[in-house]
Length: 121
Image 1: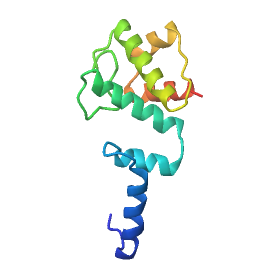
Image 2 (image 1 turned 30 degrees about the vertical axis):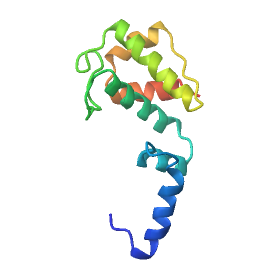
Image 3 (image 1 turned 180 degrees about the vertical axis):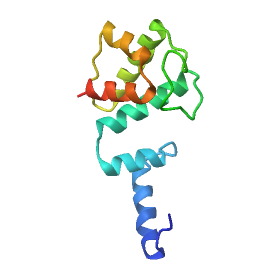
Image 4 (image 1 turned 90 degrees about the horizontal axis):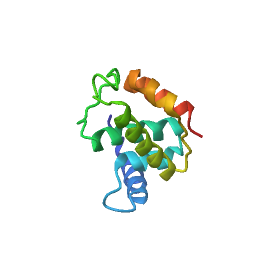
């Protein structure tokens, strides 16, 4: 996507104003501009946790959590707990129970993100 040259100074100021530290990413800057979105926060929390759990990106949205991402019930409980913590850092509340953990194992990554989004306020 080409940005017209007359808009470049404004675009640069936009990203500079959103990048409060050297670690601030473009995604975080765009997210700040777009406002809070539960679905976006859930997606980012899920993707980041997969990476932290050693599942290297790119993550397959059609990958099954138990088969393709190799989670068992204990691992899924840990994953969901970490996702809950990540979402709480964004001001969201994600609640789940034992049945949610078992059901999540059979979900694809996309289905799990939707399931988590529906359980998040």
